[in-house]
Length: 294
Image (cartoon, rainbow, N blue to C red; front, side, top):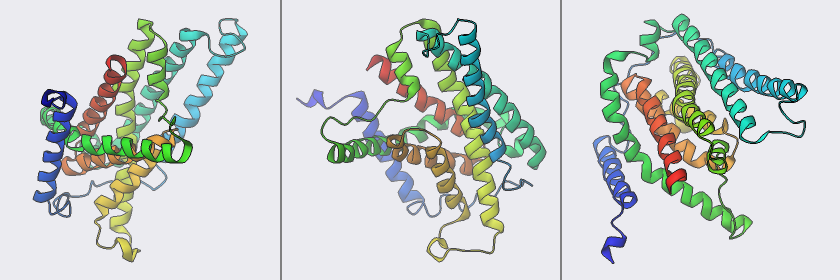
């Protein structure tokens, strides 16, 4: 009977709860967690993070639509829609290329806007070995909270929409479960574990979170209800909201808010973008593994 409860998942949850509890005790419930984290010096205007966001959401969507139209005109792509896994492969190939181009735009903007250029942005290789060891620990600490958010979202969904309610899978996860072709699965894994973490962390943490924190730190306007909360934590909260809402399925937002807070904290605490990038990549890889192998 006891062996039924000793599983990898349960042990991971227990370890995560202990880690998170220790962090709360050590940081006075998080109040002192970012007390010694200096802001990243930059000269970004408030609108600058929206430039790569526009390139990604609008530019890539247009290219996907154009590629479908072109392939349809050449009779490579049926007019009725996607041509099975080949169509999904082309879509993801365009997404991957678009992500790489958007990352290039972000790197260009960061070099021009941050003091110490890319090092000031958080892309320094000097501490990356520490990030590789610390990232799994941070993800483990927040893992029970992510599971709790998913369970609570499912519970509320069943209360509102009935007992058959299930949280919809991410589009990429649906692709790899509905198509067994190796080229498509490899491409989806590369996009999900390499392109997406690099792009989203550079955009939402590197640009948006930094811009919001810089604005709050330099602004004389204060909301009394949030006066006791440091600009760093406020920036983490705002960037996490933007990060969650950038994903199309609202049922994913509660868990993504918590994940975004973990990623934002990792960035503020270390000043390194590699740590949230690695955490994000691990999270996506674990999700894909769970879907493929149960």
